Amino acid sequence: MRFCRQQLNIAFTLLELVVVIAIISILAAFLFPIFGSTKQRSNQTISLNNLKQWGVALNRSLGDNNGLMPSDGQGSSSIKLYDTNAWFNRLPPYIDEKPLSDPYYVTNPPKPGNRSVWINPAVPKDDGMQYVKPPQKFLFCYSMNYFLSNSAEPTQPISRIEYTSTTVFMAEKNDDFANCNPKYIKAYFGSDAPGAAETDKNNAAHFLFCDGHVELIKRAIFDPNFSPNTNDNPSSINTTNINTHFTFIPYPGAKSS
Image (cartoon, rainbow, N blue to C red; front, side):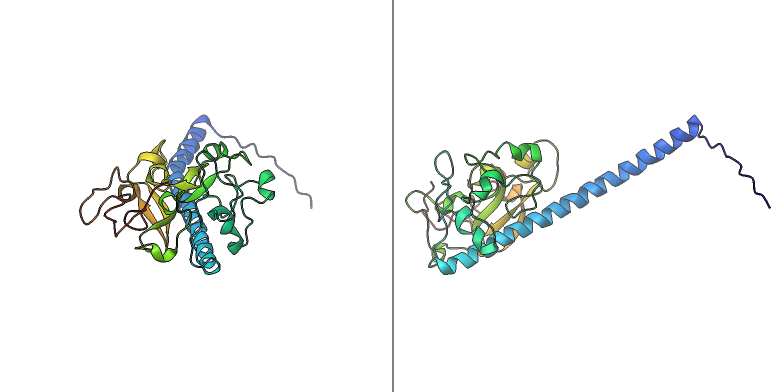
């Protein structure tokens, strides 16, 4: 028995193509926000876990250094790359990472796109790469609280910090400075509109506190330019009346760099 093959000529009319394209466009409009939201949640989880790792490193290092905190390692215009007590050199070995002063980072510096404890995946590649110029510049997606270290007191005992559960140790950012204050924190979680990470009061950033816990906090709370100041809730950078809810100041009268 012989079977004959019949060739089918299948073609779409212009109307059918228009209908298919319209359906795809509608589905894309629904799915893109979902995919974007999923990616942001993933980035959020990764960055939170990175900061938890830095918290583990801090806690482990305190036992080997008589309870003394690391220094922020920031000089007037550049980092103190070979300062062994700087957080970026002292803490990494406690989480099986190389200190930033290791020659490895001259040719393999932390940069956007790396899956690394140094990198917040929410940092846009173009924004972050401008700071990847080792050994003169390194990208810091996380950095130490500016008020925990100064030229007179580069290190201080953790026991001196009045409220360890509300005093910031480290926060998210995106530049080449190893320390930070509220002015330079980047809040990538929320709107991704241009400039939202720097100005949107509803965008949030992660903070590692001196007791080791991590929180996601909106700019409206952490930025003194937005948060209302009262006797019970003074500015987070007020060195006289410490904010017991959220503060960068370790103890009353603390000096800044």
